[in-house]
Image (cartoon, rainbow, N blue to C red; front, side):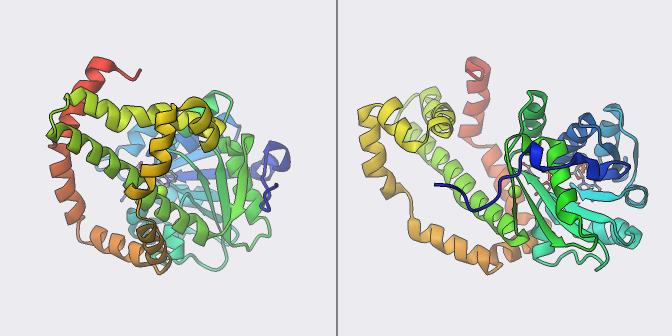
Amino acid sequence: MSFTEKIYRDEDVDLGVLKGKTVGIIGYGSQGYAQANNLRDSGVDVIIGAGDRRFHSGWDKAEKDGFTVMSIEDAVKKSDVVHILLQDPAQPEVYYSSVHANLKKGQTLSFAHGFAILYGTIKPPKDVDVVLFVPNGPGPVVRQKYLNGSGIYGCVAVDQDVTGKAAEIALAIAKGVGSTRVGTILMSFQHETEGDNFEEQVLYGGAIHLMRGIYKVMTENGYPKSFAYAKAIRSIRSIIDDIDEVGIEAYLTGRASRTCEFAVRTSGPRVVNYDEIQKIFEETERGEFAKRWLLEFSQGMPVLNRMRRTWQDSDMEATGIEFRKRFGLS
Ligand code: NDP
Ligand code: MG
């Protein structure tokens, strides 16, 4: 079989479209750090726009890494491509206070997630390109893979194309960050955003709650804590690379034990609620997840703050600290 989507690789993308242009990275956190450094190492002219250094750490960090750092307003004025790498819920406020009024006709406004554009919390002027580029992984991994000569699968989308070059520019950013070394696809803002929000709810949400469930039941039933922790977290780490490398079937039939294969195939479906997965997908498509999250953020994140407190103080977290001390990352 072959994919219907085009997979862009290094040879399909011209970094030259960024020649003579300045990319302003706005925000120097997980993605900002990784993407700015990779782009610079790829020969792209990068400047950093950071929040007030009294309140935000990005300015000092970027300066220490040898970048030219300036206020977000100045970086927008001096850039041809404005790549917004601020945390998502903070974007609208920063955008309207520091970015919007400084955008010029023909500039490229770029994101690493489509949330603000899809849900309309940011409405860019009609005379700029609006694109996104997302590497499918956290910043430190994006940086490490690049340094190892590899990259992370990426996606690019175009929401407004006034220059006729919006896709080329977004793909060039992908190339500079290293994502076309392995493959990058073009998709829609809607699919990027909702796909990401769906994955985070179901895969990350489901997996983390399964880890907690395993640890809870085992320790409540008298198992040694280090053993319960290893079963809850370390064991998934040891299989996921295998599955990614050879596929589910080859893992189950060739690398897992026969008992494990039987357990996975017969009991696994009882743990997962497919109807709920479908419901979460539909809620995401109706914008209900986005609405809940925007409401939570606008109220100062009371649910998250409360949950952080109880989870941080949990027995599982304390065990994790001790576990890592004793057993390292092996
Ligand atoms: P981080 O939270 O790691 O970094 C955000 C940066 O923005 C920090 O430098 C932060 O500074 C700065 N910032 C936050 N609020 C303000 C403000 N009000 N004024 C000025 N600066 C501010 O975010 P990520 O790198 O995780 O996310 C950036 C984008 O990348 C998001 O759109 C996200 O969806 C996307 N993305 C993230 C991935 C990930 O794994 N992390 C993966 C793929 C995409 P300070 O911390 O000092 O306040
Ligand atoms: Mg995300």
